[in-house]
Image 1 (cartoon, rainbow, N blue to C red):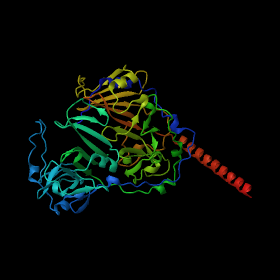
Image 2: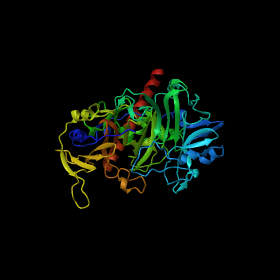
Image 3: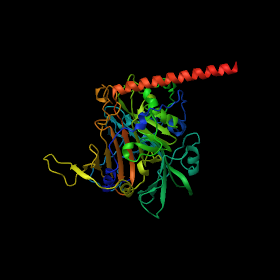
Image 4: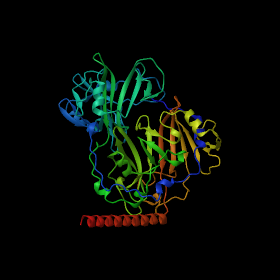
Length: 520
């Protein structure tokens, strides 16, 4: 299991990296990009249809357990035994059996299902609001293991992917994985994710290829030796807890374009400090927030959450987009001053990158990226800081080993670093003030009577950096920038945009008349 480490110097590294915060001028520049009025929807289900054939039956995850039971698959008695090889722990470990009850939103471990001498493994999920017996829940995961009993006939995808196929067949069929883990055969300890190494070893390793949309929506292939042939698939896991991707025609939404969309202008260079929110993502330079249309132009596709209408001034979570085999979950904000919109006409106000997905190519200010070290950050941003306060107990006593500390940035009022230490990783949140005069809507997100209206809370501008506690490497970034608007400026912008459109229309008509005169 990947463990994530505490890095004291990372907080120091960030402290001098942030000057007075302001919304990047480039986002609301007077320059107006032409933009595209029409966009074609790309449809490419590939492995993400989560369809497969088990025996003679065509199936698609998620599926009711009763559908498997009707075909002879039953939870095996082996599921009622505890794995004796598991290390001893003080924590009570829940053992899942055919009689288990799942709470609302609970996932089970993988349990063996038997049909005669054939064995598969299944994960259950309770998607209801009430407790349910495990056999009443949905099966959201199927795993086939060549070393665990007799594997039934199983194929998926157009190229009949199954246990025993060669590594190169998977790559040719599915493309470059979202990420690849390499683990020790002897202990299962993680050696590396892609090119980021965690431990040096000469022991034998095994590779796992992940094709991932979300934490519970992915396909993985374990590559090892099968029937004497190396570089072969020995385990396949297919897991999906939501409705699979369906084609989405958003061409109608593209016909109406809020004025603020055309105001976006991406950066030409990486930011000099984190507060610029300028970064390189999958080869493209962006400044957060980003019009969702811009992501579509750059090859990202909708997966889920695209059809929800978002009230003006409101933030919604759960939009998932993918590019190839990388998928990112976004918060989107509707900056329009008049109408509710689906995601096409909104701005993405968050972005993330993580070694375990989306393991994208990303570079922040001064080239800091996934896999960068604590030393890289310290060398780039310096290490002087002033402690503001630490967490206190209920009686007002300072805690010497506080789980969370807060640091102010000297000479930069309003900026601070919030450090939270977890068991496996330390998070350093570089938080920036919201009191800068930027452009805001006539309503606040807290004024909207919507369940998702308070997603941003009080913190609207921050960058979180996760550092692994055992490797001192950057494991994950999370960026969020959702500025507010002043209604008068919003009106002025709309008037400027309308004037620009009229000017362009007159120029087109004049050019057309001149062309007709020349042809005459």
